[in-house]
Length: 500
Image (cartoon, rainbow, N blue to C red; front, side, top):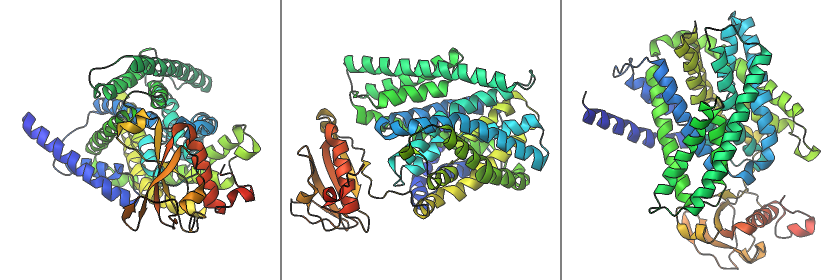
């Protein structure tokens, strides 16, 4: 097959994958399921494309995950996740350890699996997937701390799980002791942290002081810095995933030149990486071997969803020492337990023992493939409903709206999108009664599909969409005022409501 035909086929696959995003958005399913389906259709059971090289799949998968993590770091607001970092770090370390041991013990007892394979399976499934979490949760109106925990956890927990999976996949050595795993993990995480926290600030400093001849070079430079962090940490025997996430988290929260186009470029690169990754994994899978894995896969998935993940959340909530006001409620813990979405990360990690020649590793890959498909279909669409039932949703929260116009960046300003839900205290309030700071203004109202520029006496209604322009310095004040009015109406101040 010549190059032109390959390019045509790849282009058609990408276009079909892009078109499927709209379907996934409407159903609440992560788009990864559609991409995996495309891969299965292209594979041996469909068009007959043969690909069974687990080693190549592992290398491509790890590189694609680095791009996805880079986009996650660049688009994550530090102010949004700052309070969530302590519980997220505990979930990504203590929680991962608890999940591995709990799932391995249950699988060893229920299915008679040997301890090495059971621990491998537990480690592979311990990591939540950044792409799945970002694609689903960023559409949910969750409180800032809860969504921040889930986002930060998905960014942090890839590193320790990769370390454990690689150590357990070393077939030439006996199964490592707990102390060996812990010491090695601490060393690799420390190296990864040091590299990421060095590359991020230094790279940002250089970009702010070097005038590149074309604006399009800045996004490329940022993505190159992400791979400097990833490869540098890996060559130093550290965690490349942690390095790339920390480096891009720092870069994404600096005032870089052309920051908004850079984030847009990173988002596009991450989408392309997701499409290529999931399609490749679909082609790698053997559909004829999957049916026999359905029953054990369902058992393992139920243990993970109803026992291992909730136990890891509960233990992590007890382990992290926070103030009384920051303590995770049982409702938040229940939502965190259900929202631990699995995606490409477990499937990619399952290629590591397969490529290393571990006995039974192909079966582990097939089981993980089934678990990801089935439980993503169960968890993804039910998250909005569960958030409402547990009363952890926050529909009136102000949200960032990405724009690609330079003036806002030059003026050090932000553009916010605010949705007014039914029952909000904002209903019936006139624009001037919002009493926003002088450095902020409601610039547009979208009502029943029609947009207009409001006046000071324009009365807001439920279901309105507002565009609010504010300087970066007073953004937090604007958000607090909008939350306060949404909760208690225009006299919120009299009731002591501050929108905190």
